[in-house]
Image (tube, rainbow, N blue to C red):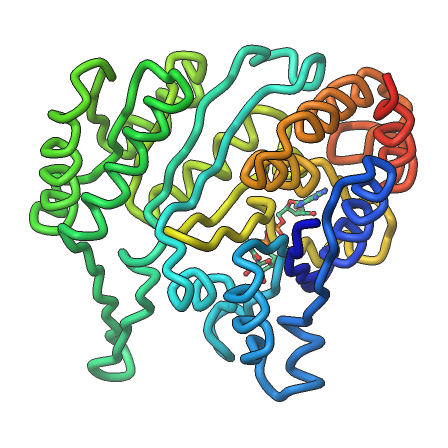
Length: 333
Ligand code: NAD
């Protein structure tokens, strides 16, 4: 039995984590969940969105599945997501982007992975106001974190038989920060002669991803560019409802969908659970439960062939429930 921390989260979080619980139950996955609250519920209960009990539980179990957590815009507490990644040193944000058969006819063969540096860049949250009309943000890039994410990206490519790593930057303008990021990736790339290496400026990369996404394999980025490009790439395969992710550290991993708490559809029963289910496939692989991971991945691929049960984000008329039931019915194939 693997003990895994489960954070239901805000907005659609409880609806889609409940789907994972039920699907894992049917899969007979050897997982025992330890449920803890972060976000809005935790504020009510503990006066903070990220109480110590959450960090303690993840540190103890080493693995967590997390629903999305709302962050107020322009005011209020600091993002729980960013704080969690920082406090647990989850330095790599792994975001596979893979087409599902029949979902988006424009791009059927996308199979790339965005690896986003997860601890620094603008997400350090260092901001100050000089006066009422001028505010500044500090963008922090270090050689240590850049080399660490580079090593993670090239090791990932090697482990998964991926052929190419593309480093994304804006070193033509941000000469010191992105310059250091790029120099660090280049240094590490020399140790992996069998992996093709290329560099792309982030604005060009955005266009290339829309025009020719099939050309990309592993993409490694500083934090902010990785955040933006992974939403863009999610759009290419049919939307955020399909895009999984994982925050990986040396000893701890927290799995979560790329998307947020989707307050516009929360409570309506139409949230797409696939992104979190695909994150759960990654969790099963991380726990070396490869057979179960394959079974679940296959069930998702088969389920989406039935267009009647798809949620509205996939242009269907179904609900979270109809999609869940279809996936469960495909587990035994
Ligand atoms: P969002 O990802 O929540 O939603 C963007 C759009 O995608 C919305 O129209 C939403 O309905 C749709 N969408 C997202 N997930 C979906 C799903 N599973 N099924 C169907 N449709 C889905 O982004 P946002 O609206 O910019 O952010 C809302 C909140 O989430 C903010 O407070 C933000 O800070 C937070 N957020 C949290 C995380 C996280 O917990 N890791 C990540 C991103 C955003």
